[in-house]
Image 1 (cartoon, rainbow, N blue to C red):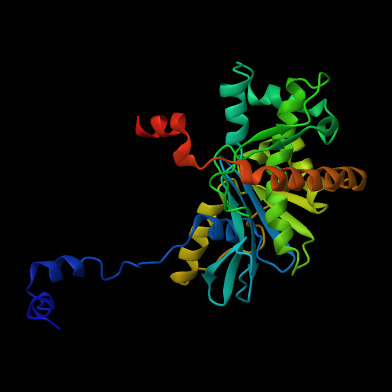
Image 2: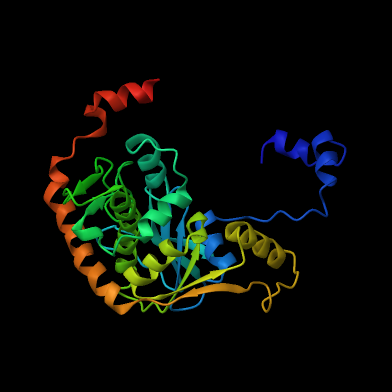
Length: 294
């Protein structure tokens, strides 16, 4: 220990006096927003998965064993005690719809109107597939060069088809993450959270594509509530288990829709694998480089 450090330990030192003001203050280490979201929305038990869609998206599960995917498609990090979070994060969540609305369709339609249009289109959008990688992609691809593609456009497709294809694509990519997790674990419940839970159609897509029951509870800010729970436990406060959250909505999968979606998901993966070598590296795109520099 240096002389300077010893000086700081002197009860008369100014810093020591200031620190003494916090002698009864608890300092609690927090966690990542993803792990805290699992904790806050109840997706902690075996067989449960959390799906979050805001601007981006993620699929996560809690496990008691450390699991690293050989192909590095998913992550694994510590949550608390002997619990770990496994899953993956997608860069392309609801921002895909915002991009479609503002940059491509250039419409004043609200997102609510988008959802109404999409509801009038059957699952799989008459074979229209969209790769949603407008920001490149993290899990499960880990390809910053990936880009968005509408595949299968015909004269019968309309704005409604484009919207629904984008919504389905976001879920397809999360299913690509979830599928890796479900290779080793059974999932019978999905807890949905994030802004997309305000739209029943999008949550029903989630249930149908994963073929798993989806629950939405009344905890709007699940990450924040998870952080509160960590703090309460750290200082010895009792965490309310019963009655702390209420399941507001429950969505059961439609088996027929699931079969249709699986056919389209397989095409979704095939299209990406066919074109992935054609994507140009971000630094080679002059327009994007100039945009970043500005």
